[in-house]
Image 1 (cartoon, rainbow, N blue to C red):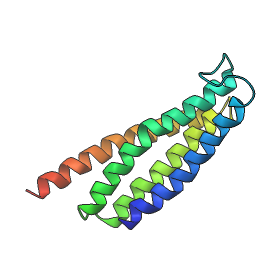
Image 2 (cartoon, one colour; image 1 turned 135 degrees about the vertical axis):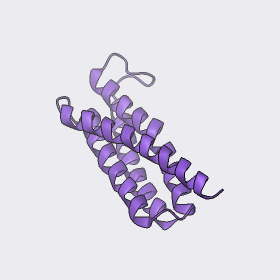
Image 3 (cartoon, rainbow, N blue to C red; image 1 turned 180 degrees about the vertical axis):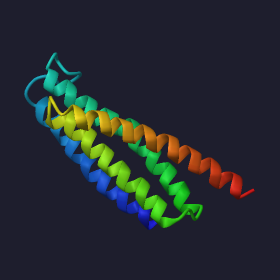
Image 4 (tube, rainbow, N blue to C red; image 1 turned 90 degrees about the vertical axis):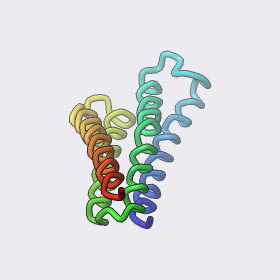
Length: 128
């Protein structure tokens, strides 16, 4: 599972950055919630949104890799996930006006959920 490990490692570093950006603002006010701070709210949502989608997609990638799906396809899923989360994370945590990143980060993530799910179903049915 070296392909999935590569993307899990890269994405964990992005998650660390998003986490540290939340913690950095927590020291200046709200220790719980967003305290009415819109910048903190955006950072919390960037961090939370990452944690809501990335683990499941990585899990699907790992299953697909273990089922001997083409390494090229698994890499394509991984690169797309990395780009999607970079776009979305930057749009929410680092910017207020980067609508392109938020839209395409979300669209690519949802596409990965669908494609990954269909590929998992395909691999499961092929194994029967």
